Length: 207
Image (tube, rainbow, N blue to C red; front, side, top):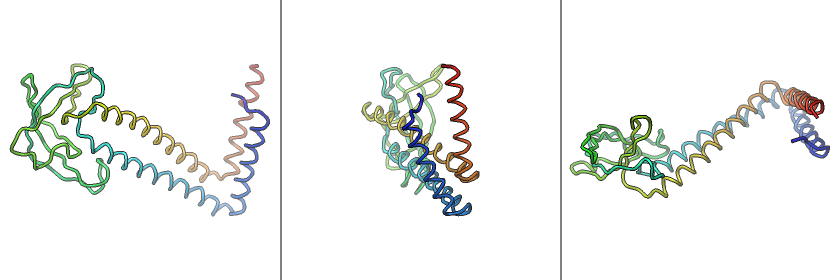
């Protein structure tokens, strides 16, 4: 979509204000200010990932929210457990990773490790009701968990989409401000404007 004159003027004013602020600070402090934004974006990326991992860890199910493939009933026997935290791949807090033997309704036995405190040492000594759902060619990618409402799995799937968008946005911001830190704001906008001018020239010739 082509920019009209008003959009171009507004963009030029924003660029001019940012270049003026950079030049008032000088090259060192100007770059340091840009790098501070890089640090904020990177910290936000880490913090938001850990917060979302924490939310996901409260869900004990298999993650399946569709009727296909079907979840199969199973029982799990809990063996040794290991506690992780206070910061880990499960997010903030302390969580149990437990080795289990899963016996499916079709007679198979599977040894695996389940995370997120899906089971804990308190579950040892008695069978735990479980579910199995398998994906991929030959159903080789299987996931295990406790019975849970599909609505929660659907909500987590939606959260995963939001998480991907947020991560991409923060990565873009980190890369953009890192570039501005390295080359400086005036050179960055000079490069952006050259590219924009080239695209407009191509567009006019094409039209």
